[in-house]
Length: 82
Length: 82
Image 1 (tube, rainbow over the protein chains, first blue to last red):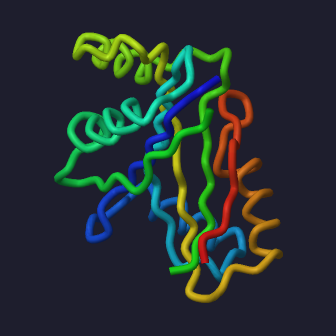
Image 2 (cartoon, rainbow over the protein chains, first blue to last red; image 1 turned 45 degrees about the vertical axis):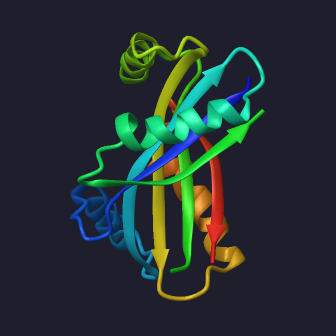
């Protein structure tokens, strides 16, 4: 199914308690080499037809203005999977 | 910073009320062409050194056994970004 994938992460200078908890758990489980974990969102927008350049443009705008919270999150990628 | 990115999505036959809400909102905003929205997780595992093949293997195992809930989620990708 054609889709646009929007990837959103918490801003770097923001605490991410959920990520911190996972990082602590991984360390407890013996993964000493993982220095940190951040947990963000992966949003799939599905289409019943091929994704056009216009769709991608629209999705980038929506990702910034609607799907993410600009105060605490960064849109790190918007990609098409046809 | 070297990192492994784990992408996790809710299983296809599972309701995703958050995704449904976003899909409805996008339709209300005039995006008639988006047939559905699914919202999953994007987890970054950070390393202070280069990521090795062994790290990737470990991460794939952790993604399946610990980072995702096998009953309701699928690991859709585990990638390295050095």
